[in-house]
Amino acid sequence: MGTLYLVATPIGNLEDISARALRILRQVRLIAAEDTRHTGKLLKYYAIETPLTSYHEYSKESKIGQILAALEGGEAALVSDAGTPALNDPGYELVRAALEAGHTVSPIPGPSAPIAALVASGLPTDAFLYLGYLPRKSAERRRLLEEIAPLPYTLIFLETPHRLLAALADLESILGDRQVAVARELTKLFEEIFRGPVSAARGHFGLQPPRGEFTLVVAGASQEKETWTEDRLRSALKASLEQGSPPSQVASRLAAEAGWPRRTVYRIMTEMEGRDK
Image 1: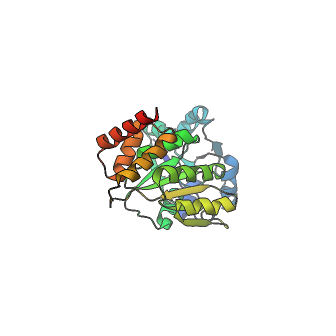
Image 2: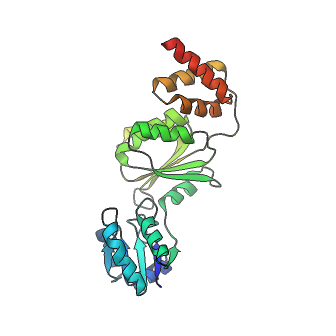
Image 3: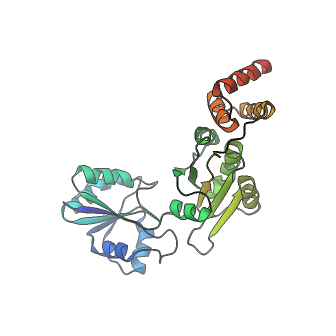
């Protein structure tokens, strides 16, 4: 049986690739690439002439058979546009198919934007939660943030430039003005990592149009809880209810943040809703 290599490629600087990765890309029978034109530039830079085939969200069903056939006769490699394959791309489906067919799957570690941003963020790295791209729609994005608001882990997200400001606004509204590192163009000429409160990040990127791909690293919920006063709790409840957030999620999130029993928070919220009717 063959071996499918998951080869991490540079996220910007073409020098960020290992000698082993280059050797594997030269020796395999076939390279499956998310974008053959993008990967072709990398291969040309290193004078690698291994045949390429496309493997992306729209071609995966028709290409899995071709890649498995190549594995029957030897080795193949999977690469993404940048970074580690099978993260935020359909690579995991090929991995499952290769394993089910009895092939070996071997990772060739290397660049990864989420990990690069995390270790440079200045935020805790001992426990983190990677959630990929934030939902596109604000309502769905806020719902996700409400679910994870009480978690103590450092949070990592990907975001596009045209949604960055809206995402930061929802982060501040739901998670509070936490510390954040906003990394863009990592390893490239115009690399930037903004570190500070979410409110400051909104101001910074509001003054200059966001460009490039962004990785957001956000501090987890503080474990040193200060019990809120009832006035503060009622103010937060009022703001969340005005935004249309689901009552059960509001109660869970604010109970964790305020240090109050969820049942009590839900009772106060119900009383407030009753008076508003």
